[in-house]
Every structure is written in C-alpha cells, then in structure tokens.
Image (cartoon, rainbow, N blue to C red):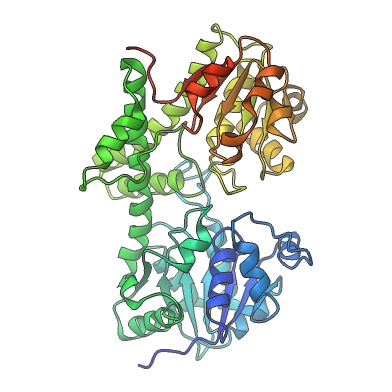
Length: 471
C-alpha cells in the first residue's frame, strides 16, 4: 500500500503545541498547505492580527508566523472545511487533569479529544490520517479509532497515528527546527505503517531521517508520559537533596555539578528550584499513576506519585522558609513576588510554583505585589481565583497588587521572592531596589539565579534555595 502524499494538513487546536508545531511545519514545507483551526474566535483573531500580537509568547515564533502566514499557513474557525480538505489531521487539543468523576485529580480529561474525533467522523467525506498530538494516556488511540470507525461514511477509512510533542516552552522553536527525535507510533499493519511513512515524509523535509523514530502505537503514547515523568523525577530528586543541603551547610550547586559530571547521569535537569510547573510534568505523572493503578500495579503508582509529592513539599518548604525568616510572621507585611510564569521565556502559568507561593502568603495574611514581564493580569487573577476557590476575587485583590516593573513591585516591601528565572531579574538594579525596601531587606532566591554575595554587600539578607548557611 503506497503512502499518501500529504498536500494539506489541518491542526485542530491553536494552543501551545498545535500553533508552534504547525507553523514550523508550514515554514519548512512550503509545498504543504497548513490550516490551524480553533473554535475560540478571539484566539484565531490574535493569530491573524495585523501586528502579529499572537496569543502565545514563545521566542522566535512571531518570525516563523510572519514568514508563513498567508502563504501556506492559515488560521481559521472553519473547522469543518479544514477537516474536509485535509489529507492529514493533527488533534492538538487540551487534555487537562480531571477535576471530578472517576480518576479526578489523576486521569486526563479526554472530552476535547473525543469531541474533535467525533467532529472528524461527522464531517470527513474522504479517507484521513488522524494524528494524536495532544498528550494522552495509553490506548487513547484505540478509543479514537473505535469512534471513527463507528461513525465513518462509506468509502472513508481513518488511520490513527501517535506523534507526541517533546517541546520545552521557551525553546520550542529551536526544538522544532532541530529535534532530538520525532516519534511516530502506528498500528503494525500494512495500512498503519503506510500512514506512518506519510507523516515521516513530512518531517523528513528538514529532520534527518535517523532522528525520525517509528514505533508501535502504544509504545509511542507511553514514551511521552515516560519521558516527562523521568525528567520530573530528576527535578524532584535534586530538590530533595536541596533540603539536605540547607540543613547541613552543603551547596546544591556544587553537589549537582559533581553528580552531573558522572557520564552515566549527565548535567541536565539537575538544577534545584522552588519546584517544577508547566502543562505536562505533573499531568503526565498523574496519568502514569492512574494508569498504574488501573493495571493493578500499586507499588508502581506509589513510586511515581512520590515525584509529585516531593514537588509539592518543595513549594511548601520554600513558603515556610520565607515565613520563618521574617521572624515567624508575614501578617500585614509586603512581599514582592518576581515572576509568575512557570519558567522563563513563556507566558504559561499552568501549575506554576508562583501560584502556590502567593496562595500560601495570602493565607498568612501578607500583602503581595506581583511582577511578571509576560503574564497577562487576567491570567494572574484567574489562577489565584482557582487556587483559592473559597475566597472571593474582590478579597484577593485587596491583598494582591500587580506591578509594571520589578522596581515598582519591590517598593516598601519587606522581602523579594524570585519565583521565575527571568534573565532581567539577574540584571536589575538591586541597589535601587534595596533603597526602596523596608529594613532589614530580605531576598529569597527560589531559582538560584542571583549573586548572593553581591546582594549581601548591598545590605540584603539573602536566602538561596539549596544553600545552607552552616559551616
């Protein structure tokens, strides 16, 4: 069975995965028409905006969109037309953790995936290759295939592929231009392998063939969860060691450097912090926990659950350090939180440690001022409302102020807390900040980005995560 030559691609979902991924595909494959569709009119309008005020902050993404949009890259709310015209359809919709029902708090909510799949079945009048791009639990492709086959029209066949994304927000464009690997999973049938070759041929326009890995459908789905779980595991491991460092006088930077020089371990993801966040790590681990429990593997479930438990502990421990250092109370005190995104070079706040820190400070009845260079005010209020569902937003806004700069956020504060590793926080005028603060002035570096000795020379009392003061 000869592979289909892909000439038109539809991507359902114009979010953090679908938008950048398909924009780069359009740029690298000028002979393929790529249409990204979403039911959210405001989001599509932003992607189409004349001034390129696109809805996602990702370094380099605007340049990609500028080069391809209007040529072979299009953004639309006409989902049905894009489905009908496409040879290949990426399903790149949100798969949040369920908040209620069976598996609440652990299992992925596949409502959007199912809705998109049913829409494809209802609309398609010709055969399609349907590609899971969203992060999904194992065997989701089986569910999609069942829905498509049960609702397909005469003469229509659907081949399901899994093509998980391994992007890191902040470096997504570079990751897409030069990926470590592209993983494509298919049923190991003649039709499945043929569909796999069709998608591989798209990526082969710019990705070396040895980096395009073709595997079974279920291996592909599990590989995405496994990769994120193991990366998160390294972060929780180094964060657990950071607690020991603070208690003993060791320096987590030195420990991580020594461990990372072991070629069997390597240096990546060994940087201690206030905790990991983002759309994938926690969600994927919890998916793995739920899967393990469903397969009656309680020891495996407990093992992976501990990675998340350690991450939550790290955030609580850091909040407690702030309170303990400020003479065991922050009631009525002004705390400046610099950074609200879950990491630098993104506006994404999903599972951001900053949300937990601010919530903890508010529960201690502190006054908090927040500054982040990319996160929109509406997103901050939404995140805090969700973190404190029993507190009216009006009450939260009495305790929280949003500032336009780091200097403004720090004025009259007793402490500055670094929650996101934005480069600008390394370079700001710390002497000017010191002069505007109450004394003694405290800095809590939750990302290990500041020169503590230089700050102490200015006059700050400095606490850096993972560095003990004992000699």
